[in-house]
Amino acid sequence: MAHAAARCPSGRGSGDGETGKPRKVALITGITGQDGSYLAEFLLEKGYEVHGIVRRSSSFNTGRIEHLYKNPQAHIEGNMKLHYGDLTDSTCLVKIINEVKPTEIYNLGAQSHVKISFDLAEYTADVDGVGTLRLLDAVKTCGLIGSVRFYQASTSELYGKVQETPQKETTPFYPRSPYGAAKLYAYWIVVNFREAYNLFAVNGILFNHESPRRGANFVTRKISRSVAKIYLGQLECFSLGNLDAKRDWGHAKDYVEAMWLMLQTDANQSQRLSAWAPPSRPATTARFAAAGEEPGSAHFPFVRVASDQFWKSRCFNHRFTFLEIMSLRQLKLWGFQMIFLIKNGLSL
Image (cartoon, rainbow, N blue to C red):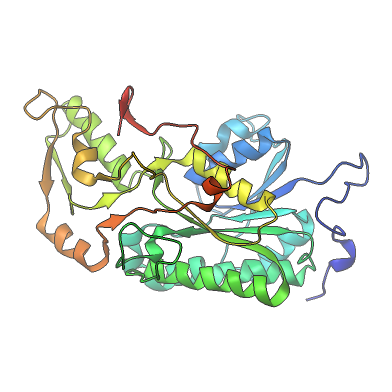
């Protein structure tokens, strides 16, 4: 495939040829997800031209970004443009990158559900692991190594069977799921491209972050949706696998700002980010499920521990994940704007 270097921007910050202003063009995979939608909002507010890669499906899966269309009813695009593509198709990735010539790439696309990764292990590896390689190689093929900055959405699932609590910058990885293993490959291939080709490429190891846009099959939304159904009399109880799992929950809006900040610094290095910092504390799944209601109250949800789910959770679920050091915080570049709330007026 012919390289497109001659038509690519000469470097990061080069003018757009008309106004002379630095080009600010972002390409987001996973733009229709929780993080992708918040990131698109954030970048549009910063004056970026935003491009997103979406998979073709029989129905629209753009509910989280409908409001970002110039005309949502007619799906008329403004400064946000969508392209059909897939991380399993290297040809389409090269075509899109060559056409868009982004100055920043945010790779948020993934099969990101840990439990489902056991059922779709090969697919998860292809999308989350090899898909990252395809995207990086497309940047190289298009001759954009010197003009693009690359953000890879990594995960606390890299720690898996945690070797120490809290985790530190030096804590070794030990993934315990196909998802974690695929993301570990993605982590190291990003490092490889950074060192081999001098590409500005960083991994953001983000710990749990939630929002109303979180997918319904994740534990926080499963709990909140079930509690709402119990309140409405539509459900008597719901099942969880491990009530002792302790997580460090933040808000997705804060985390997408951190993603952007990683590409604005001169430090071409990976960052590990979490919401935990003294005197705050991580919370258990049980505490999350019971938040806002007292036991014995009319609407307190009855949580049933499903033995089959609990047994399966032993295979892949790590009990304590929260981080001690946050480089962006230490550099005083990032702080929390959103206090993570389960219920209005109730801080976790």
